[in-house]
Structures are given as C-alpha cells and as structure tokens.
Amino acid sequence: MRVKGQIAFASNTYLVLSKAVKSGLGVGLIPFHMVEKDLSDGSLVAVLPNESIPERPFYAAFAPGDATPEKVRVFVKFLVQWFRTHPLD
Image (cartoon, rainbow, N blue to C red; front, side):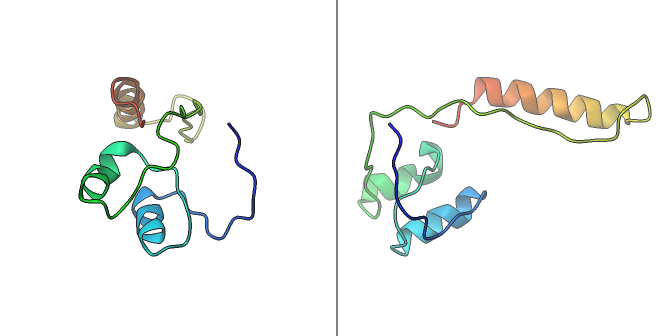
C-alpha cells in the first residue's frame, strides 16, 4: 500500500520520528522495538499493523581501493550481518 498526502515532517532518525509522532505531527514508519512500550501503554496506536515494510538497500560509503582500513571493512561486514538478523519491522 502506498499512502499519498502532504508530508508535514521528515527525518531519517527513528528517535526524532517517534517524538514527532507523539507530538501529533502525523503518522510515522518506526521499527516496532523502538515504540513497543508506547504501543502497549496506549500513547501510540498502530495505524497499518498488517502492512509490510518494503526492503531498502543499506549503503556504506568509504574511499575506494586498498587504503580502506581493515576495521572499516570489518565494521561494515558486521552491520550487514546485524541487519540481516535484526529486521526493522
């Protein structure tokens, strides 16, 4: 389902989105684990609970070539694995 309408507020930070939704700015797409307590105590209400979240790519930007530090490559590999085992929905 694609929802159309005017955007009142946008952010790429879940904490900021959560605060905006709680302040009454509208609805937000926020991972369940971030608002689980708010949903259980009634301060937030799930609007489209049966809708799935479309997959989106994960990007990591760093300089090309062999100059990339090993710790950066290890960290990116860790993030990829973590997000595969901890879905956002």
